[in-house]
Length: 109
Image 1 (spheres, rainbow, N blue to C red):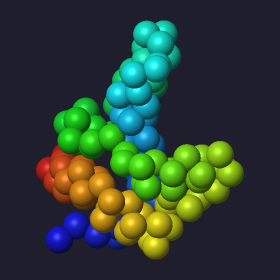
Image 2 (image 1 turned 60 degrees about the horizontal axis):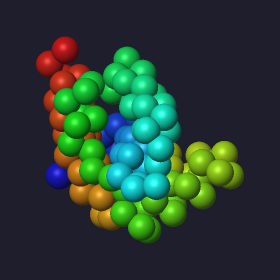
Image 3 (image 1 turned 45 degrees about the horizontal axis):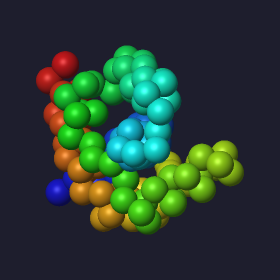
Image 4 (image 1 turned 120 degrees about the horizontal axis):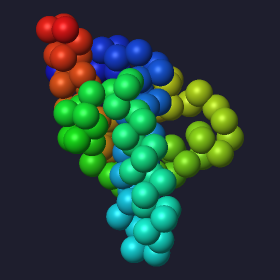
């Protein structure tokens, strides 16, 4: 079973952030320019997170989106804490799959 101990706090933040950005991409009110900016930002993250890992991350749901948005707005490290990230793993199981892929890729690299 994947736990939040399998990945560094910084990578926890990145995975949660990718989920948050993916949610923004499906917003029907977003302009093409805004979508392009998000896609460019996600592309820039491929230096830190493998594209295969990023591809399995589903958009944040309502509750996890609120957790992530609040943490980003308040510039806190809440997303890196065990308690909050465990909640995010429960709300968005794709984060657990992303951890499995990421740690598997690291072990073979």
